[in-house]
Image (cartoon, rainbow, N blue to C red; front, top):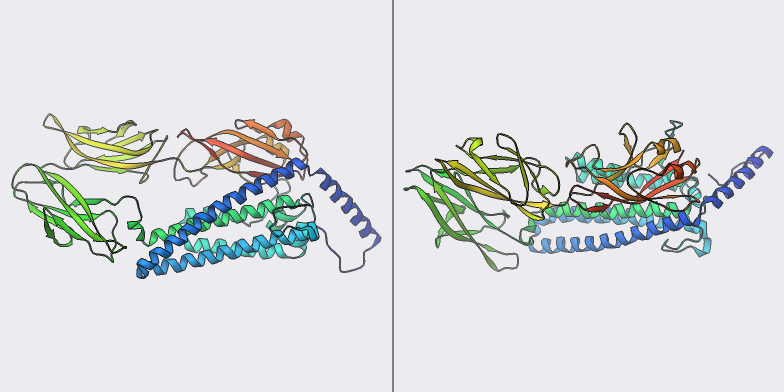
Length: 509
């Protein structure tokens, strides 16, 4: 760390200072153009992601404003929270932007790019330390990142998984040197003896994380308003009976509703041309057999026009219905086992027949099924029952099929311990393989395979690798203080798709 001293230097201090300058110069010479070009490529890619995120965010805020104009009573509270998130995100984003520019003013002086995109002194190892550490600005940045993280925690109160995710993304915890077991502050790990190109790239990465977090938070708040009822691509009329099997002489009752409900707008319900109150349809079941009925729901839209949603349904007198539920999720993920529970009131589990087109179905117990599909779109689960030597349809359910969420890249040692960025010795690195997973708190169980990745290090050619094993010979040439970048990581999941899962940065200790 460099900077002016406040007292006269002794001859010994001057000698140490001269040795430090020589060491710094040697380190600067060792930062090759290949690795610096790598940082530039990553930085440009992050800026592309930021531009896309800002376009999506702008559309989100526009939608939010439109919803507020149509229903201010319901949307006002959530729009206020969204605007606060927008302000906090913009403030931290701008601070990071200015932080980069101030570092460039030290490194490039009058040639500093006011947008921090073109860097002359990319290999300068002092500029970041001078501004962030000597100037105390690193501590200020850490405080602002912590404040932003706390805002996210408050927004996701009651959702520990989200809180843990963002505590990792915006972590400013000290870094423990695995070899010395000593703690190093976040500021030192970020800025001390780091080339300007690397520091600018990492700060751009934080800006990208801010825009991504902002988008997810605003989308979450928008969903809380329930105002998206008329903005989805499909609205269905549903018939919810109190019972699907009726005995002779009893009454059949069913509630008719829209699948998206707005408590501030009252629909009108009609069955067979006659209006019914509160969507409660009631009729006497006087004979055995299949009964059909149809109607419509009329609802005033946000644009002032009345829309009609047709429905039709049927019920079987004295026959029960099927209950189908996905035990784990409200969607089906492609390529993995999805657990389902199926039951039919009044029917023994061994007499239930399950039909799932384009999927593999395995029964694991009474009413418990494992369903695996490689299809896309929707999965239809049809249930029939064996009654009096005949097979009769009991009902069906449709579930959205989604691709698996993107996993996270980790370095895993022989004991299975996983870590991401940090400080590791060459021997530790040689014991590691590259893996992809959802981490310890996974909500979905899926096995991913690393397909390929790239190893970048100071002064060495780029090493492209297929598979999971790090190149031991490449690592053997690395010395303490070098930075290893593992980028272009591609993982394939059981759904058969390849996904790019980011970058790992390891400092050799």
